[in-house]
Image (tube, rainbow, N blue to C red; front, side):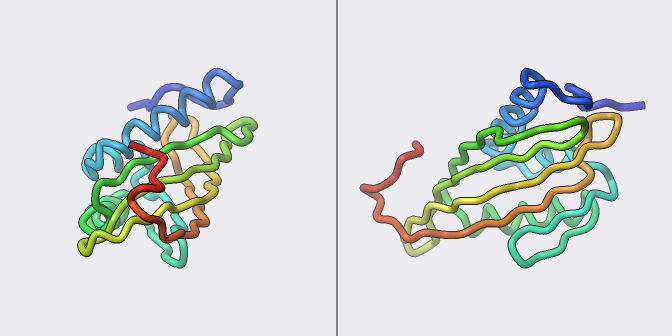
Length: 137
């Protein structure tokens, strides 16, 4: 059986490691790589979208990074228990017209016994910014 370390139940060290691994993966902007952290039947809510399964996640990410150019993400562990982790995050990106945004949000994650994320619920808000206001590079 394939595993995605670290495995639940999480402690401070392993929860922090899981969050950093997610940040690193998402910053590659590689949908093929990122989607492998999720179960085949993963359930997501991303803003107002409901996404089901690893293949839908991959398609979502392909479209996301076509729109969100020069994407840069920072995640922070908020809380954890057993097989769940909560994070806060911010990321910056610009659209095809050069308008920059900073997106803020919270995610709730639930993992299976093999360390794959089976549920991801994200609430996200976007703030228009000038390029000179960027914090993430």
